[in-house]
Image 1 (cartoon, rainbow, N blue to C red):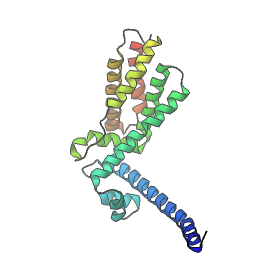
Image 2 (image 1 turned 90 degrees about the horizontal axis):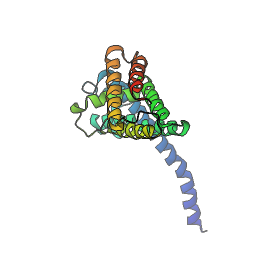
Image 3 (image 1 turned 180 degrees about the horizontal axis):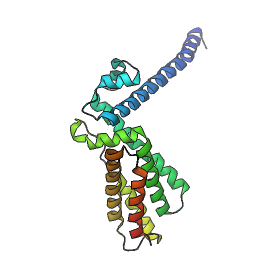
Image 4 (image 1 turned 120 degrees about the vertical axis):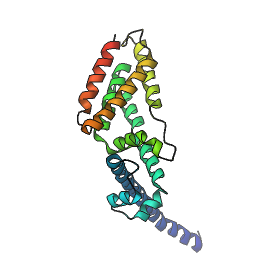
Length: 213
């Protein structure tokens, strides 16, 4: 190795930690902005929130927000995408720990209700989906993924004899999605989701009482 090689090697070694530190700092700042935006959107709704509101809540400058998100629409899309990012890990975790399709279906719904009650990002994403007509950006399509998941689980539960043989997996999935998301919205409007788990338990027990074998 000649002297120039040594210089290059040493330079790379010194620069790499600094570059990684800068990337980590940027990632933390972006997450800080996202959570501040989620709190603002959840509390005030899309039309009222400004990037300055988000910057103030995050304890950052408006320029720092602009560095990561070019406008309010991009920030709203990112919050909704983060909302949806919650679901795949949840479903994977439940599928690995539960045995039967019906157990998986009910546990996923139980855990989802808890997140709608407790998680700011989930709550913000739900509100933004309701306000999607006011957002000039393409948001992820709501509900369809849930219907597909619940249809698959319901079909498996019919096959294993946990649900009545005349149960339509597609119809059950549509009813569950409509009832669940309607329930969480009503609970939000009336009590700030304070009674969500009680309302959810009612709809879960009534629906499954009619289809369980």
